[in-house]
Image (cartoon, rainbow, N blue to C red; front, side):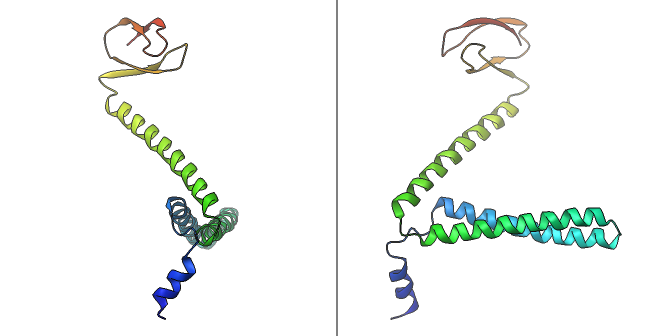
Length: 154
């Protein structure tokens, strides 16, 4: 039996790689690269006889290295776990949170893009985000969600 078949048989019934495990893997390697960067900065400041800065970077190194190793262990645990239902539920929650973050980021990008032509504000009653054209003076706005009417300056 070749290695590929052995690996296939070993991974049967296990969770394997999903979106959350990829995220954990990238985050752990980012922390480990940050730890390497803190090591270089520590050595750089130690040569300049700035021992306080060097000590701070050494502490940051240990923190980043520890978090990186913990995330890597968590990644291995998730990939080789046989409790597939629980791992899938965790992955679904992760995907939902990431989708909310992407939507929020897209909204922020759109607001930045439209910042010269539109003004964004919130309804004082229901906190719904509303967009109105700029440079129109005081305008009467009706919230599309709660039908609250208020006056604002654009």
